[in-house]
Image (cartoon, rainbow, N blue to C red; front, side, top):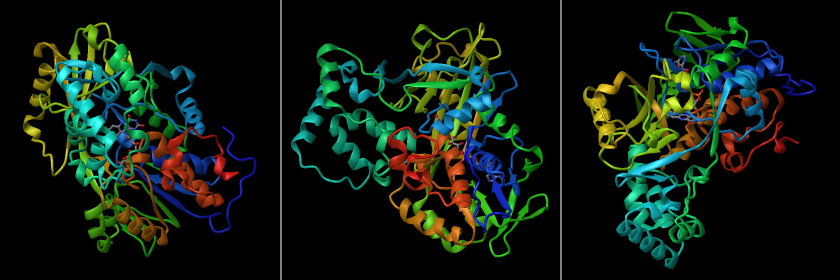
Length: 481
Ligand SMILES: Cc1cc2nc3c(=O)[nH]c(=O)nc-3n(C[C@H](O)[C@H](O)[C@H](O)COP(=O)(O)OP(=O)(O)OC[C@H]3O[C@@H](n4cnc5c(N)ncnc54)[C@H](O)[C@@H]3O)c2cc1C
């Protein structure tokens, strides 16, 4: 890929030692962009043995491949698309039509539910319509939080039936503790024209969203992308199994758990912000972080199954579960993403279940697997326990960066403070902006930061999420012209 005809390094950055912490999509995006710009004085330290971070994949001892939750490729960037092709090659991908569904009231309803309420029982349909009539008649007010946004956007009916229970389950927080600023393209709103057509004509609307088609690696799960990206970088500059345990902002010095010391001019950190604050001893930032930076943990339970999915599940991608008869909020038919996600697709299939956890929604690890299996039986995803041939349990302490009410205040204090000390914190938990925390966003945060440091360009993904999410962007960005 052609990046720039001419490489223009600012004088200050020309010889700068750039140290990157983390080999997830953000750190790898930064490392690759440095190489493409011919800036060779960089090093990347990663605590784990492999690249990928939350976008890594794992193979269990029965040969089933798992992601850390259902990872789907979205892209807002021509640059990201080209990078994906480069990493895995045109033949490395399988292309799918998204089929996402909601399971409730003992039936599957196409997602988004709010456009397909004609599938609900008649009394639920009446509640939904009544709520929509009420909001149409009431004055528009700017919602003070996500809970109010749900009520004023969908009305009390859809809120009670789906939006509140589902969102409480996925986020692990009451919607009143979350801001409404992030919503943008991430939540489908009600289109009354589509809804009424569906009610009268009984037609489904399944086309919503940025990912109505998606691609997935043929082999190796989502992690294959990031392992391939890492392989294209000079091996000597990537240090795996090197957890960072100390950061000295004044001396520009990093200490690792195995006793090594690294010096930097510029540090790019992709570790969770609370870890950056703790490891650098900046305890004065802790109150802002504790008040503003909420998060939930993600428990991923993989069920490797004998046989084949039922006809109902044969073409489904993922399903949402708002009701209380199961602990998971989402389940992916992971064997539908690639037949290579199971040891032998003529004999096995797989389901990957996601359960959120927070202080507001604790999870008992000793009973979680059993609860998930019982939930899969309750929701008819599986019919017999005996078909389970493998189980895989994984917990990501930092799973979702919750858009809390005081997040932006906290970030406005923390991010510039570190930048004054030549530390740039980016990525899903480095910048804590859910709205720009998918793989494409994270990778581009790394890329754009390097473009800012080397060429003075503006970082659009990190600081203008609304613009970035509004459409697909060319490379170089239209705003850079
Ligand atoms: C349940 C779930 C579902 C998701 N679904 C999707 C999806 O469908 N589509 C999508 O595009 N994205 C999805 N994502 C998001 C995707 O995983 C992230 O966008 C991406 O992984 C973020 O990359 P990152 O580099 O910012 O952070 P991370 O992936 O978290 O990487 C940070 C890296 O830093 C390393 N690190 C941390 N601390 C230290 C230390 N002290 N020393 C050394 N190294 C350290 C970590 O080991 C890690 O490798 C999902 C995430 C989750 C949790």
